[in-house]
Amino acid sequence: MKRIVFILALSLITTITFAQTITYTKDINGKTIAKDRYNKTVGTYKLDINGNWVYTER
Image (cartoon, rainbow, N blue to C red; front, side, top):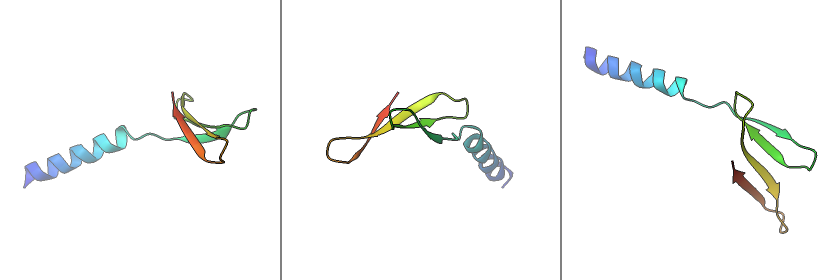
């Protein structure tokens, strides 16, 4: 029983520790930029010719 509680607590702590916080901003060109909590660019969103959102990872 103690082992199961320990494993559950450890998995909860690792999940919280490695979770990302993503914020979205717009640049001058109209692209939506996804940034993590350290203000590094994770990816960008932009509209293509057909009006669909295209995500590009960095």
